[in-house]
Image: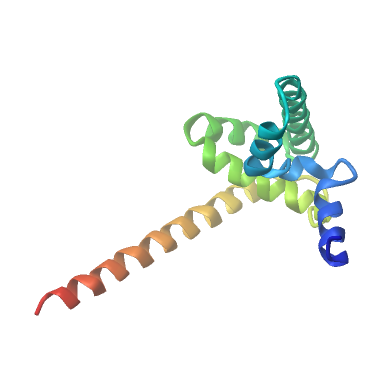
Length: 138
């Protein structure tokens, strides 16, 4: 059997209809698909549609109208960034760490936080590369 702790974590994420947070992950779906025949694919698509639906319902519930508008604008330009923000908001909503509604200002702060993370991580790689270049200069 599964480790009871793992089982609990697993249930928390995948049980009780909470699977919309990451819907089992692409790998999991792929394995499931290989094990079964085509009829299951439709079910999977339906599950994904439901998961997306649940996502947007949560976002609708916790985002102020102007924050939601900003997010959909971002999604048109940078889908992956918008998705990251959505994941953050949904995770926080599930944990109950969002009280009330996320305002436009709060959303902007989150966006800046993500941009800083991205900048910081790209800065690290640049510095690392430079260090390697120095080693080559003998």
